[in-house]
Length: 77
Image (cartoon, rainbow, N blue to C red; front, side):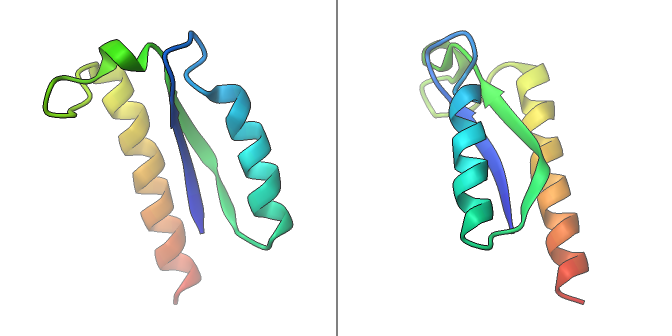
């Protein structure tokens, strides 16, 4: 099971690349959850310690991680 996250200095945050990664993973049998997050302006999105500073972006990433954990738990029952 995989959840997709991307970050890039561009305005879309790597979103276009996630489409291709999703296709590749799906073709090799990986279950990819629907949720994904892309962080734009990544060179400004993180502090010196590597922490994501934007609260909205934090929520999007947290949502992907929560869905991944929930889905993985269900699949492993």
